[in-house]
Length: 436
Image 1 (cartoon, rainbow, N blue to C red):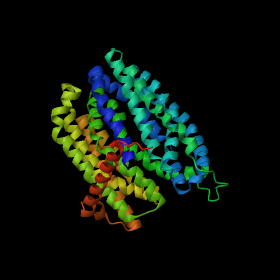
Image 2 (image 1 turned 30 degrees about the vertical axis):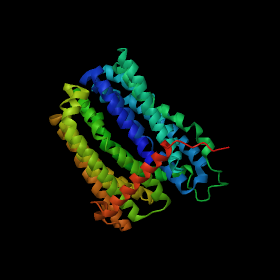
Image 3 (image 1 turned 60 degrees about the horizontal axis):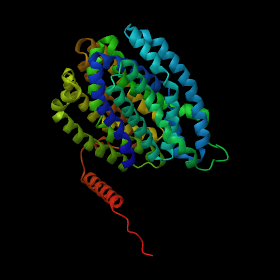
Image 4 (image 1 turned 120 degrees about the vertical axis):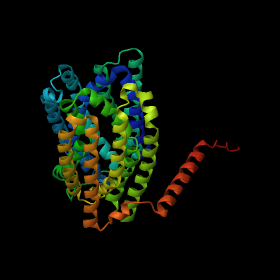
């Protein structure tokens, strides 16, 4: 969990560090152009995974010796999907760009990263299924760290333009694949055959598609607003919204670490009490982080990003609330997927996504970035509540167990903190040389 937390911490921290660089160098309109160019990339990657990385992770967590078969079949599926996704982005450019030729060119550049990023997802699924969390964390550190290392020299030499920024944002995540160069040496001995068909192409596609519907809806719920902002409003409003999103995603560091580990551990062995405790503890920590950001944001956000981005502060406040209310239900959704019912998690996300898109069309032309934040909040509330209800109906986990704070939660946090301090102390303590 600690390793996953560190890995998840890097991307938003780097996004927060690189955000002012992009904002100061490109301005609100330029930052909006880059966001408009890269949003379809993220959307295409999410839409065309077909849930394969998660299906690979599920199969490997169940039977680690099937890892090679799962990797081969998973890679085959995503290669075909990647080619289709790249073509789709290229064909959709005229509409997604709002007719802006410059943005269309940037979208074409970003689309080249679709296929390698999808293949990277399969590698991540393998490592997660084997619980090699250090490799997953190292991938995220490399990808985000290299992005910052490239952006800073471009900025200092006045070479940071919408084009170079798009290239960096699209290409650097792929560089995280370097972390998995050691993966072949960490694989267990291969099983003689796949008697249950768990890692076959059919099985991966079947599980993946049930999860994929929810993945599509989840990504649409969190990313379609950035894709539609330019045609529905303007690149200026998108520039404000992107900054607000970057800030509001900081509490998600804790939540995503808990969710990722919970999915694999609950797939290996399901425990209701552990699942509910994970939801409560992650919500508590997210609340503390969100409160700290919300109270101080009006001071540091304009100073960090520039006075022109002051309009992003109230938008970020509302998005922080949205992130907080979605945390318990997201853990419940991970429990549904881990217990072989990804279709129900998908159902909750589909309903929320439909409502979200309808609100985007209604509110963004009128309220701009704030309208998108309202639509996101409503969508998150719906998906979170449905996940908890469905988990309770099928597996008897009570909704109230996912909320509030128990004394046992505080004890768990205390023990966790003590273990971290002891571990850090052992690492920092100088080693004594043995006497001859």
